[in-house]
Length: 377
Ligand SMILES: Cc1ncc(COP(=O)(O)O)c(C=O)c1O
View 1 (cartoon, rainbow, N blue to C red):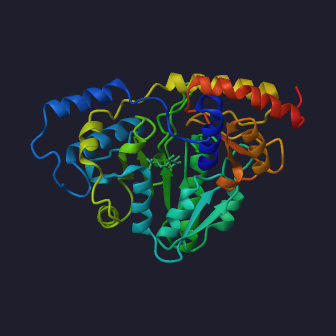
View 2 (cartoon, rainbow, N blue to C red):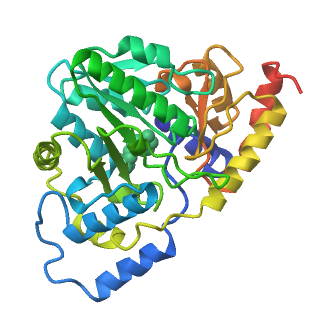
View 3 (cartoon, protein in one colour):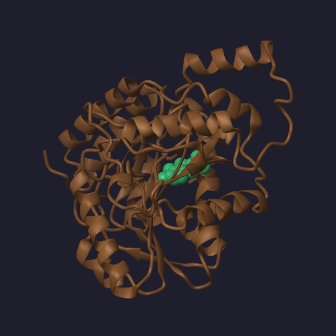
């Protein structure tokens, strides 16, 4: 998609191609970020570019712990936190630590495609399970597929590509199934929530955290989206304070962060985000984009679940073959991603973290495609 998009842009001009294929936010980091960065440059701290403890700076880990405690009511301390190179680095440190060869990790389709690669990186086997019409895990499938070798279940709420947020009720049921299966097999199963979109939630919703529903839960996240810093590779992992064998687990996570070659999360960014734990980019701006595009697409007849968070939508493809439909949109100079890429054919993903001009420019093509493939209204 990326390559073909580049060819189209070269041929027709950047302004005539409407690229909704990438989750690379156009919103600039908030003013508080620049203020912190400037302050550090003007008043550098002694030794601020040196090696540090592999888990990260104590002050930053404390700030992160305080923020999670504030949001969840659970007593986190810096000893539960490891600063990482983004959510991707955090996820790899977790899988490296908990997996033995052939251990299974459950993921739900549609999924962030890198999960498959990351599980494979550490000798695990990814078991992909279906979700229902609302993109919520099917609990019967989950129960049937947790085996003695199941080490972890990865969830992603708010979700890429659907924008769905798991409710307290869904998380409660998830936790119940995990504990039932742990008792059945005499095992421990980690619930890993990949939550880089945690702060990008709409309609005043309060974020339902999986931490309240399973003691063996681990958060992996980053400031790639909430502070719009994906290139800076700054994130963290947080282990539930009541997790069994926590000290041993933390040792493993810190060691993995080191030997995977990350060594530690970037020093400068750790200094900066320490003071930005309660800050995020403008949620209103993303919500306006969501509202506008959702209304337009549903008026044209597209079927889609209204996203509650993140900056993606996952409409049903009017053609059974989602790749063919994405190609049709491409001919109309709109770039999206086929659902197949997320393990869910029959849908396509739109990333609306783009300028309004791009969203508005794409509408004519969406309308033409809707008419061509018989969507009514
Ligand atoms: C669901 C999900 N998880 C993880 C990542 C990786 O995030 P990071 O850039 O912080 O490593 C992304 C990036 O798009 C994502 O969408």
